[in-house]
Length: 110
Image (tube, rainbow, N blue to C red; front, side, top):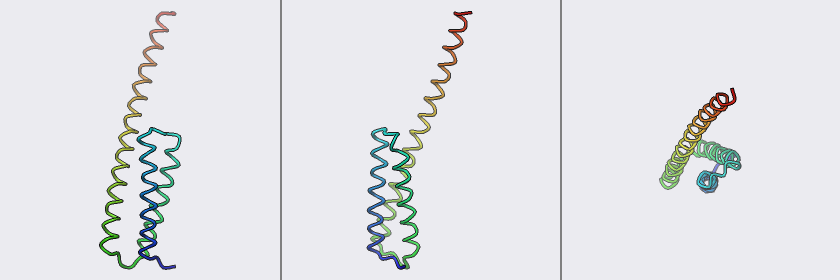
């Protein structure tokens, strides 16, 4: 099955839509939907990669769109990674505080 530039263009649009959905989850801190949106984006990106590999020649317009998509994808991944690191730090601080409270409670009770 041959891939056409129009099909790749449609897949780029699908990837951008999936990327927008993931970004909305990140901005809205909708963690319940985050995994679903991330899987949808990764699936769309994988399909795009397969299609691009099947296309013998990419024109300058498609190359430019792919570069832009890649840049947006990497920015989103960095933003998500940063939020995950911040959440891990918050959890560690919370656990440390809970241990201190437990020690104080134990001292007061004992």
